[in-house]
Amino acid sequence: MTPGRRRDYFWKPGADERVFRTVPRFHFNLFNDMDILDKEGIELPDLGAAVDAASGMARDMAAQSVRTGRLTLHHRIEVANENGETVATICYGDVVEVRH
Image (tube, rainbow, N blue to C red):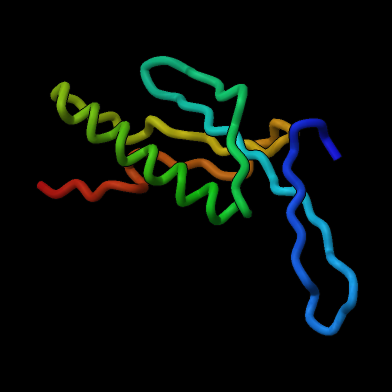
């Protein structure tokens, strides 16, 4: 187990032993007018939770951009796993609906 990593356990139905698993850490790298790499990351239960978190972050960042009078839909947040591999990409245009 990596130092500083939380280890959760759960009971497997029908088993007398606990099943241990580590909680994965995801990093949220921002690519907009500046590139900001997330060095700390956060622990989340799975990739789905990480994508949900990144979608919320992208909406917040898009809203901030709109307040300045400009929105670039291809700006994005890349979700990376503990090994630094990009496992999901959320573009601002994926999480907001633009109507004319």
